[in-house]
Length: 179
Length: 230
Image (cartoon, rainbow over the protein chains, first blue to last red):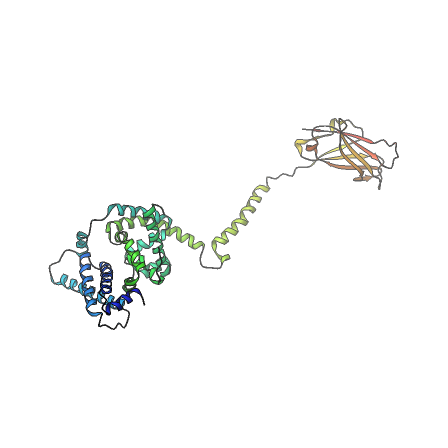
C-alpha cells in the first residue's frame, strides 16, 4: 500500500490532517495536469472542482481500481466537460479571442534570459547529440511518436531514452554551462 | 537524483513535458504522477524550461529553423554512415570490406610504384694478379658497400688449402682465414674469391697474402695488391 493509499485510509477513518494532505496533494497535481490542456486560470478552477468532487465522494466509494485512478478519472471528466463547453461556446457565440492567444496574454511574460540560456544549451546539444535536436524538431513539426520512430528508424524505447538523455544534458548545461 | 520505482513510467517524463505522449499514455503517466514524488519533483524542477520548450512559439520557430540546417547535414551524413554499417554479419559490412581492401591494395600499389625505381647494382669486382701494381685494382666505396675480390692462384689443385690474410698498408691484419678453399680450378690455375666489406675497410692500400699450407715452413706467400678509394 503506497503512501497516498495510507493517507486515504486514515482520512476515511476520520483523520482530518490526512484528509487535508490528500486534498493538497491532489490539488497541486491536478492543477499541473489541467495546465497541459487548458490555460492556467482555468486549470486552477478545474483542479479545485475535481478535488471537491473527490472529497465529497471518496468516503463512500469502493474503488474497483486504485484511489488515484478513480480520482484521476474525476479530473478527466471535469476537463472533458470544460473543453466541451468551450467548444459549444465558440460555435454559438461571437468569435472570441483565440484561447492560445488569450493564454499568452494572461500568462507571465517569457523569461528572456532563461530562453536565451536554453537556446544556447540547445545549440551545444544539437552539435554533440543531434538525435535529441532531430526528435524535438519532429515533435515541433507535429509528428506523432510512432511517425518519428519510423522516420528515424528507432524503437519507442530509444525515442523516450533519447528525450530523457537530452533533457538531462540540457539541465546540466543550464546549471554548468557545459554539455 | 533518486530514481522512480517504475522505470516504464519514468522514461515517459520528457515526452510528457513536450506533449509528445498519446492521450492514453498521458493519462497513464499523470495517474502515476499522483503518487510518485520522484517523477513529480523532477517535473517541477524543469517546469519553466519545459514550458519554453513546449509553448514558446517564437523559441520553437527559431529552433526549427536552426535544426533544419543541422538535420540536413546530419541526415545525409547519418545515412552515409549507416549505409557503411548495416545490420549484416560483421565481415559483410561495407566498412569492414573497404578497410580490408584498403589494407591490401595500398601496400601492393606502393610496392608496384616503387619497384620500377629499384636498380640492380652490380657488385663491383676487382681481379688481381700476383704482384701486379695496384693502379688498376681499385674498389670505390661510392660504388657499393661490398666488393668482390678475385685473384689468380698459381699451382692450384683440388683439395689444396691456403691461408689468406689481408693487411692494410701499415701492416694491420684486416682479414684472416686459416683454411681458405673457395676457389675454382682451371688446369693448374685457380681463381679465388672473397667478398669484402669495402666501405667498412675504408680507403687505403691493401695487400692480400695467400700461403699454400702444404708448401712447407719456408713457404713464400703469393702477394696481391689492391686499393680502396672513396
